[in-house]
Image 1 (cartoon, one colour):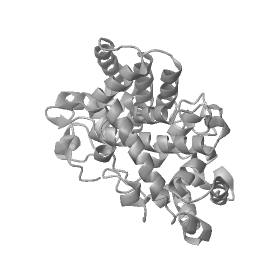
Image 2 (cartoon, one colour):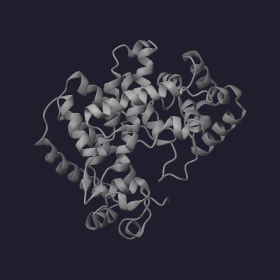
Image 3 (cartoon, rainbow, N blue to C red):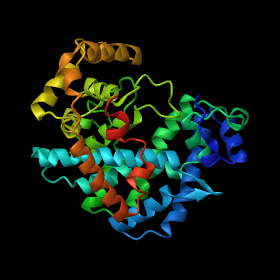
Image 4 (tube, rainbow, N blue to C red):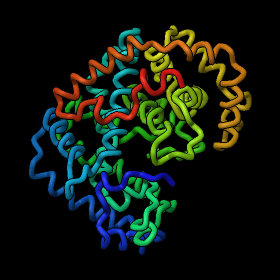
Length: 358
C-alpha cells in the first residue's frame, strides 16, 4: 500500500465506513445500501437540472470540484477524468485529421467532455467505497473498513458507477451530443471482442467492435490512464508510459480498438498510420488471446518484446512533442470554457515532461 496524502482527500464518515465494513462480503446488502445512497444523491441533482450539454458540463464540473470539510473531495477521481478527457481528445482529433472513415462525424471537443465525464458516476457513490479503491492503508481504514477491496466491493463499484453515471447524463436530455457522452460514460469498460480476459468486460451484452468510435476511444483512453503508475498503485508492473503503450498494443484487437490505438500512436510519436499498424501487429502474442491470459504472462511477453524488438524501441523514442503541446493548448481552452479544472493543475499525466523519455 502507498502512503497516500490522506489529509488532502475527503474522509469517509466513520458510521458509513463501519456499515460498509459489516456488509462488505454480502453482495445483496452492499448493493442495496449503495443504490440507496445513489438515489439519495440523484434526487438532490434533479432539482438543478436544465436540459442540454452546457448544463450537464456545468453541473458535472461542480460535482468534480466539490469540497467537503475543507478537503478536495474528488481530487484523484478528477485527475483521472481530465486525463482521460485529454487522451480522448488526442485520439479523436488524430482520427479526424487523418481522414478516418469512422471519424467523419466525430467531434473531438465532445469526446473531451465525454472523457472527463466517463467516471462521473463515482461522485454519486459512498466515499467509503470510492476512497477504498485507492488502497489507503491508514489506521482509520484498517480499523473501520479494512484497506483492501473485496471482490464483491469491486464488482459493486464497477457496476454502480456505470449505472449512476448513465442515469445522471440521461437527466439532461437525449439529443445527439448527450447520446455521445452517454456512450462514453456507460460503455468505457467494454472489451473490443466482448469477452472476459485478464479483467472482465461490462456490461456483458456489448462488444466493443459493434460500438461507435467515440465509445471505443473512451475505453482506450481510460485504459492508458488507468495502467500508468500511480501514488496508490506503486506495485504496478507498468512503470512508464512506454510500457503502457506496449501493453495497449498487445491487447489491441482483444481489449482495445486497434484503430484507436493507431491514432494514439500517430498523435504522440512520429509515425504514419501504416507504421502504427505494423507496430501493433508485431506486439501480438503468437498464441493469441490464450497466450496472454494472465498478468504474469502478459508482463513477460511485453518485457521481452520491448527489449528485443528494435522497431518498437526506435519508434517509441520519437515523441511528437509539438503535437502533444498543441493538444494540451486546445484542451486547456475547453477546460476554461466548460468550467472544468485547468488541465495543468489536475492532470498527473504530462507526456512531454514526465513520460517522454521513460
